[in-house]
Image (cartoon, rainbow, N blue to C red):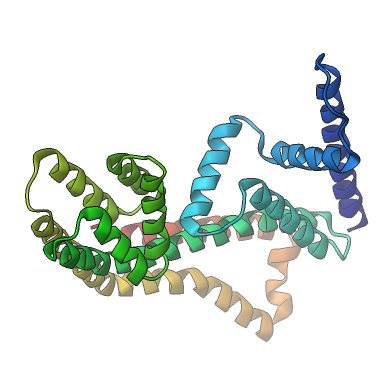
Length: 308
């Protein structure tokens, strides 16, 4: 643990000093006269550069933009640099906790697991928010239909939805309205909305609205058909989940069965199963069983996952 903490401290100090040197170098290379900067400004600039150094690897702009989009989908009000710093912090903490007994292998394993924990958490937040958005989308479209039939314009119907809806529908619609208020055209604002929220139902809605604005037609009638399509798709998805529930449950049971059986054997006769952990051939067998179990679990999940 002392080694990991020492290494983490050394890397942090090195990056911070490197950022300060870069700030000084950029000031020396500028020939024009500028007002003298205070220590607080210099430290703030160095901190900003340090955050950028954590994510600048390969193609920095693409990676940062991709991470920013994922954070936006998950509804997390943090910057990409802060999320990357959080990942490294969790990795160091888990690595240090598992290295308390001096086992470097457990420390490395904890470091790797801790590094991927925020990624799994981010994916869960994204999926949860997208699911909530899809569940509230039919109600949003129904409200828009009522507003359009009452004589309101499309923008006014969006404003009514933003006032009456809940998160995440409310937040997403407010972003679209603000984008149009800042000078973005309605078509561009809707396309940005479609890119920002990876929802197939939203893509169907945006494509239908864009086509209607080009060729004309009754928008309220079109939205009615979209709501009907979304509800029928949701109904079919629920039926598929019901029919494949047995297969998914079987995959989980089959994957956990060797672990449970090994634990029972260990309670009955610890010396009988300890050979798998002490002998080289037993460790190879455990590794092969682990890989085979993971592959079988994902294959069953792949078979029982049917996209509609």
